[in-house]
Image (tube, rainbow, N blue to C red; front, side):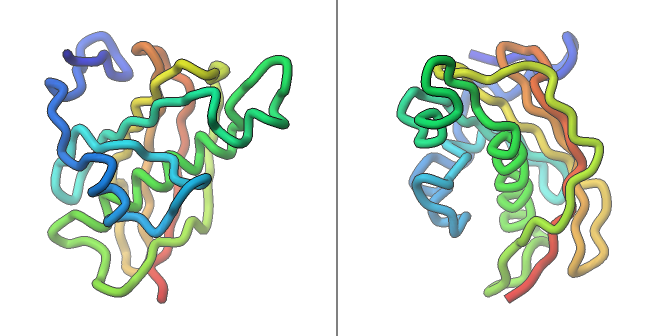
Length: 160
C-alpha cells in the first residue's frame, strides 16, 4: 500500500521495506528510548530517503508531555529527521566514512504544522542538499496521513 507524500502527485514506496527494524539498529548508534526510526522504505543513493516511525502510547516522553493529552515533542520529531538523514549518509555510495558518526550541529527553518499523537505514523523524507565534508546539509519533511506535520533543514558533521 502506498502513502501520499508531501503533495498529491507524489507517492512513497509500494510498501517494500529497504531496511527493517533490525537493519536500522545496524545503521544507527541510537537505542531505546532514543531510536526514532522503525524502518526505511525508500533510498535514492546520495540523494533521498524515506523512513517510517510508528508513534505509540509506549513512547517514554508521553509520560510528561503531556499526561492527559499525549503530544510528541517537536524536538523528537526533529531528531527523527536527523536520524533519517544519518541513515542516508551511512548507506550512500559516497557516504559516511567508515568508523565515523554523524552529529547534528544545526537546524534551521524548522516548522511544526500539526500535533503528533499516539497512533500516528510518521513518514520522514530527507533530501541531500549539500555535502562539503565533513559537513552535510539535508532538508526534509514529516507527513502523517499525507499531511505536512513538520519541515526543517538540518546540518550534521562527520566525526569520531
